[in-house]
Length: 473
Image 1 (tube, rainbow, N blue to C red):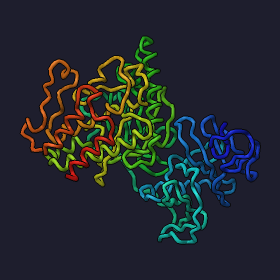
Image 2 (cartoon, one colour):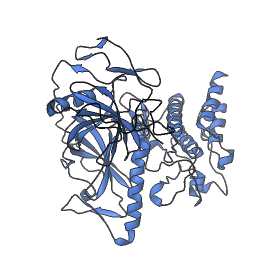
Image 3 (tube, rainbow, N blue to C red):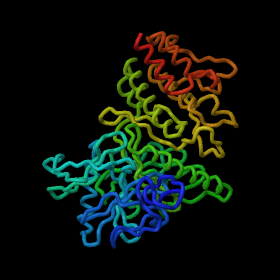
Image 4 (spheres, one colour):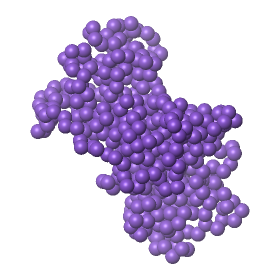
C-alpha cells in the first residue's frame, strides 16, 4: 500500500517507517488538510513539509499530469494579492538554478494554492540563518532544503520590494498569421483563456495542434499554449472559439487524438526541471478541446538557424549533436521515446542552449501504436521500422532520427527517406557529398543510420561512448 503522507510504498497501514505518518491522522492545524485529501479530483495532498504564519506547503501529486509536486496554500488572513505577488516573484526567479519553480497559481476548492516543483522525499532542511540573500530577497531558517542530488533549493523567501509588473503590452508581431493559413484556424489575438491567459499570436501549426504565444496575466509571464486542433478532423466556428468535429465519421479519431494530446502533456511533465526540455505548467479543457500550458522558449529551431548562418561548420554541428544525445539520454532515462526528432523540433534559445520540443509522438518503449495520431512520420527523419504496421517504439528509433538530424546539419540536406532504402540503399555518406568529416565520425554516423534496428547502435550511451573514444584517440 501507499503512505498518504509521503507516498512511499509501505507494507501495512501502521506508522510509516519513512515519514512517521499514521493513517487517519488529521491535519496539523485547523487550516491544513489531512493527508490523503484530493482537491477537485486532481491534486492529492500528503504531509505538510513547510509551514509559516502565512502559508502551508504540502507534498502533493497531480493525478492529471501524473507528477509529484508541492502545493502551497494561502492561510485565511493573508491578503490574496500578497499571495499572488509572492507567486509572481517566484516565477520571476525561474532562471535561478536554486530557487523553486512555480508551475501554476489558482483557486482550488475555494482556497488559493501555488503548484510548485516537487521538493522530494529525500529533502532535508538546511539550517541557513540569513546566509543566502540579495538586495531583493532574504532567506531564513528552514527555507532551504537539499535535494536528492545534494544541491540546495530555496523553497521560500521574503522580498524587500513590491513586485512591479513587466511592461508586457504585447500586441503580436508584424508577421500576423502564419503564411498560407486561414484565420479560422487560430484563436483571435487577445482572446483570454481560463480568465488569465491572453493570446498574443500563433507560433506554429502542425497536423494536430496550434501553438500560441500567450501572456499569463496572473503570474506576469509569457507562456506557450498548445491547442488540440487536428486540421483533418475538426474546424473552428468563425463566430465562436469552440472547436467542432467535421463529421461523426471521424469522432472516434478525434477522441483518440485527444487522449494522445493529454499523454503528450503527461510525458513532457515527467521531464519538468530538465535543462533540455520546456516545463509543463498546466493542462485544461475548454472550447470543446484541450490546452497544454508550458514554458515559452524564445529561440529558433536548428534547421532555420542553420539556413540563416549559411550552414554549420562540422565541429559546431557535432557539438549540437552531442548535446542532443545528452538530452535524449535524459528522456530515455524517464522511460520515454520521443519518436519525432528532427531539426524543426530542436530549438536553440537566446542563451544558445538546446531544447527539444513537441512530444506529440512520444511513447513508452515497447508500447503498441493504435492510431495515426500517436506517431508523426517525417520523410528523411523517420526510422525504417516506423513504416512497419507492427512497429513498437524503441530507443533505436530516436538514435536513427538523431543521426538523420546530424546528417542534415553537416550536409545541408536530409537523408534519403528510409522507406526507399530497403530495396537499394542509395544513401550517400557526407564524404561522398564532398563534406570534410573525420573517417571515424562518419563510421559512427553510418552505424547509427543502419536500416535494420538489430544492426544499429543500441543505446544513446553506446553512441556517446563511440564518439568519446574517437576524441580520446
